[in-house]
Image (cartoon, rainbow, N blue to C red):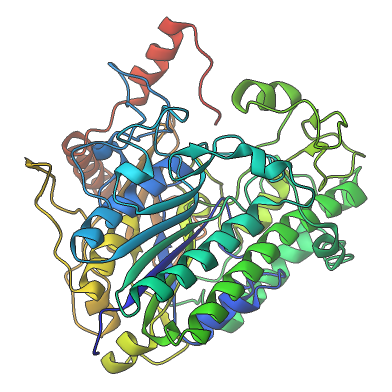
Length: 537
């Protein structure tokens, strides 16, 4: 290579393992599918179960507890997590900026507890030359709060008729690239493209929604079976790599035949699909721009999701308690918060989610959802394309990479691709060593020692070690799965292998102490003493 590669890191918000086309879904994602066809799909990549923690880990190469974002961006000091990205860590933007990269962010940040006053946890203070997006974690796609350009609030821009956040995120990403190419030519850039789609609320262009008329009418039971068949055909799940079993239907999810609101439910999933579709269209515009500028093939493009599908069923109290909501639309119509059967989702006057049953489909073939560290909560589709860098390593286009990795591995991978070093200090103060390791050697076929992977979120805990995965929900006993043949986590072997449970539990406790995991009981006591409602689970 004659120049350092450009790097584009694309993050979807609350999208399940099997939603996109190249991972078995019904949603039309030709541009993401192109990345997979011309690159590599990771079949066993893991996120950190929740939006803020995943972003913190993705950008720092550390576990979220180490950098102050163990739950969300709530300031729970002095007893809990500060909710601000720690000053004692280095972001990908900071490390790449030091290596001569221009750095851009378009989309969601969600790593600062103070979202109104510029501070040390804002993206412009953490290595990004330019920023357009939102500081908060969720909100209207038509009139989002905390909409910011660099450090200036620009919420008024969303008052324009037809303004839609996903499109604005894509438009600014394209503009950043075009302006960079015109001003800095061959200098490399890092673009972090962080969509809020398809996280609730269900807001989408009606023409996108209509393209999915009838697509989900068969219901979640049939569609889960069909997704599994496509996952098997693609080789993403196989008997040799986690089994091909489908997790049993969540007992809280009714059979589709017993659903009292099938038309309304099908519409909810149509809008969700339209949100993913619109995101893919934006990614396509970016790829076309890179290709037109002659930069695409020497750009490392990575696409993934921050957690599994979201089972949160929005009601009036949930929405009004945790999301500051505008009372009216741009046209002055009242906004109705919550999942109201019969009310048509998609427009600005509604504020709904697609709920547990469709999240169960999104996470096919796994069990559980966002928040939990069973496979449905942490398994993410990851796609990487970089012809100029991967072709020379012998990696064939369309390859499936099956080695387990997690978010802490992304930063070391980006730095190795850029020929940049991981800094050992920030502002004259030492920072922890990166917890992850670059995935490029594995992609080149080089051997690597097995290692344990760890998770904790809201007391939900797990460790994956060799053929085993130890996992529990908060307050529940440990479960043990032979993850190499039972990735759907259907056969708990904890009673049969108490010695394995004991050994892995000890490894987990050592990791949790080292990485600063605050016990869930401490967090619950903190909220009880303050008389505060708990963050949404």
